[in-house]
Image (tube, rainbow, N blue to C red; front, side, top):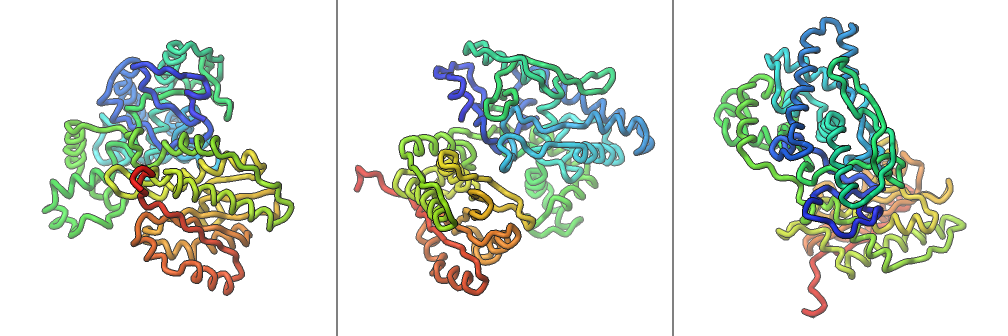
Length: 475
């Protein structure tokens, strides 16, 4: 459920440019510190300086650290402890709703190591702390977002309270972790703040401006590599032997960045002069957000009642009904539009998975079927796991037919997941965007039937036609 629906905000004003979070499911978007730098406004007008000052202190403390077992090192790790911020309902939550994996002490050490490496390379100050991610592995978009959200927790609280006052919401006094950072003691302090409560998680809710959100930070290794290829192509070929732009991993990019700090400085200057864009929530090119309201409207208008399964046959029949609802929505109710971009290119596989999740989760909740997303099987995460009791269990994967690894996923990956999870029944929902996709599928039913017979699994393929459909008025 959206924050606005939960708290009955029906008349947004021109000032309402905050992200309207899905309270029971994290949206895989992240706070980009560069967008805060390029879009200063109250209460975030001094936010960039606050982030820079924080990491200046961290660099100073690291420069004085002699031993990894000393007091200063332990103080540095405590300072860089940025727990995940569930109050935002952002990031990668998997099956945990809005409680992600967090940043923990392991990540604190990763950032500390990145700072030490930066100092060894001759860097004693960073204007954009995400530059550290160009010099050290393990510092991704979720970790950068967590760091920013912790450092700016007070500003996020103030911003949220402004929204509450504007819409006559009555917040509660709730505990907030890492609400303040004491610059004298270099310690985090938790305290209570007046905030709305998330009825699904029990956490407070923190709102963030839409203009601060992206899928990846503006400053990131792939963008840095693209800049180098456009501006330092000859040296990349002569000094490093790169003949093609693709197939370069992050480790190699970091190695080049560390050896050429002037390139890093030139790149950040270039980015500062280039207009950075937040994620377009209206167009939703990744299919990360619009799925929620669209699927909720469909499910509300098309309720179904599943007969409570008493055995495996009834359980699998109920799942087939759920998948059929998804198929019907995409093929007959315009759901295919959520799987295409405005430039007539198919959206990523994630878009189909999130839309499926939105369609079936409400039905599962109403019919006592447990649905978990991105469950770790021991051999990797499976898209969905359904269960009703212990013995009635099944796995489900949502795949794009145009995926280059489609057949490997169907004939190898899915059986591996079934075996690891000790589950014998699985579904593969295949989304086809074009006739070429259908041609590529060939006789998928026969291929999977032969695989089932040979390996004693029960995998059922369901083809979903996501090709563009003409409106009824044009038929």
